[in-house]
Structure formats: structure tokens, C-alpha cells
Amino acid sequence: MKKELLLVVTAFFLMSVTAITGVHAIEEKAKTVTISKHESDVTGDGINERIQLKGVPYEDEENYLKEIYIDISTTNDKQYKIPLESGSKASLKLVDLNQDGVKDLFSNVLTGGSGGITLNYLYTFKDFITKELIVPEPLEIASTFENGYKAKITIGQTGKTYLFDLNDRKKYYKKLGLYYKGRLNEPTELTVNDFHSLKPVKLTTGEMMLEGVQRITGIANADTIAFVESTWKYGDGKWNLTNTSVHTNKQSK
Image (tube, rainbow, N blue to C red; front, top):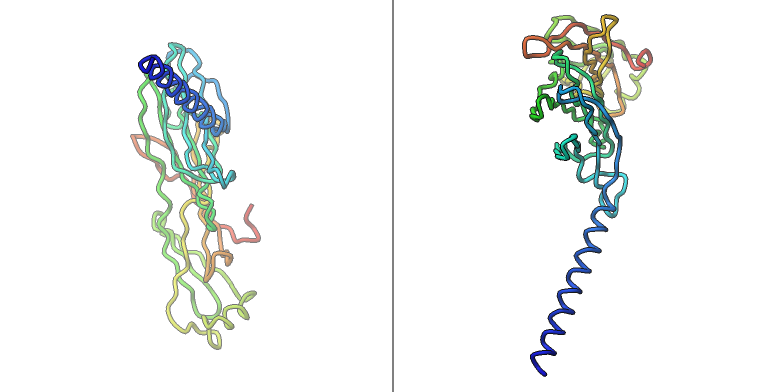
């Protein structure tokens, strides 16, 4: 009798564990959200794959994704997962950026910080092989405040220098002790941020390029002085700078 009772208790315990595990799996699955869906040939075999950008939000903060990844399903029922960094927002575009005739996977992840910085990822899945490609590095920009409520930046890649008149905010700068009677109290650099955005753009020739925007700020994150745009084309295994332009806050898009 004791043996039969033990078997019943053991069976009940196993059923309970299985049920709890099943509920837990359903809850975990329910947390995953699909950000975008795509169907395109990213392997080069002429058959479309199903590509989904997915995320897993925090339980107490639904607006922030603790896990973001690209999910690829092929026609042979195989699945591939490409993990990305966590962030508040994410996007995915399928474009041929390395000029090999097969679409690549280009993704942006917004970090959610006050600076509005995005993390950028570029992968190729040609021949069913996941390979991370490089993305352009932000421009090297030297910057400094100048006497007379001015600022100056110099782009390292081009050698071009740009001056900015900041007289419209001199009361603010004087109050914070940056200037005294129009002269700097001490040498002070501006803040050159990483890419505020990096996105694919299509040329009239049909070729795809990347366009990046960097924000230049003064003594605070809200003190925007300029936006620097750069355009990049992939070739010979690297990104080549094709153009730069500088806009003030008022002129910026």
C-alpha cells in the first residue's frame, strides 16, 4: 500500500512540475514582441527567407527592451538568431550595402540615453553564413570654444574648419562662467557625439550608401551647436567617405 501511495505522490509531483514548467514557458514566450517582419532573399539562393526583428521587454519597464535579436527562418526549417544590444527602440532594413548583389541586414538600436545615440549593426547572411560587417566610424572632429562667443570645429578626414557665432546665448554662457567680457575663462572643448543616426540612402544609380549624423553640443547636452552629416560608400572591403556637410541647429532637418 505504501508503495502504491508513493507512486501516486511521485506521479502527482511530476505532473505539477511539468504544468508549472509549461506555464512558465508560455509566460516567457508571451514576453517576446515582434518589432518588424520581412520576407526577402538574404542568402543568395533565390528563395525568400522570413526575417523578424524581436525584443523582450523588462517586466517593470515595457518601453525598454532587455533583449533584441534578429530571427531568420529558412525554407529548410532551420532558424538562426543574431543577438543585438538592449535599447529602447530598434529597426531593421534589408539592403545591399556591401555591393555583392545580396541584401544585408542593417539594424539600429536606440540606447535610450539623453544623448540619443544609436548602435548600428550590419550583417550578411549570404550562403547561410552569418557574418558581421563593419559600419563606418564617426568622423574625427576637433572642437573648441573661441573668444568673442564663438566656436570652431575641424573635421579630421577633410581638414575643413567651420566657425559658429554663439552671441545669441552669451547671457547663458556668462552666467555659467564660461566667458568674462567676451573672453574664455579657460580653454574649453565642445562635445562631439557619436552618430545620432545612421541610415541607408539610395543613389540615382541604384547603389546604396550610408548617411550618418553627429550632433555637436556645447556646455550641456541641450546646448546643440551643429549637426555634421557624412555620406559613406562601401568598396574594397571598407567604408569610404564621399561627402560631409555641416548645419546649425536652426538649419538642421
